[in-house]
Length: 122
Image (cartoon, rainbow, N blue to C red; front, side, top):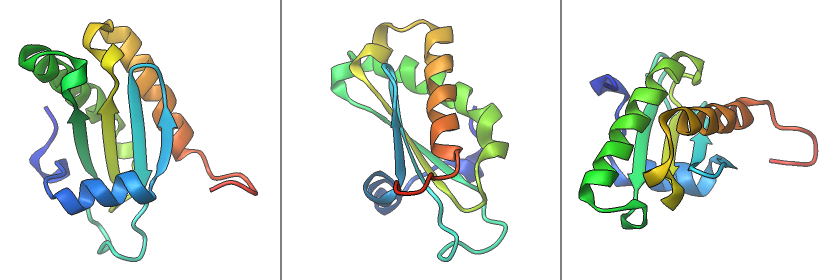
């Protein structure tokens, strides 16, 4: 389970991360990461939110996917910069994906958004 202090709850945080954050897409997930260097007080824990739309499946499937994603993100919390916002959006394929496939996609996407930006790209 994701610690309470790391859960994203405000709509504004979701919107900000999706619109302004770095994005990395994989077959089962899309990850948006926004570094809030200036706006976040020092020592603020990173916040993580999840978006699992109806296209993923019925309520049972969506809740299972959300629980899996929370479980998979927890070990990566220490990699996230303090005060950052991370949104993990499940693609329709996540509803039928195996646990190890989703884990590999999430790790790959996180590696990509945490990599320093190269010249000429945001």
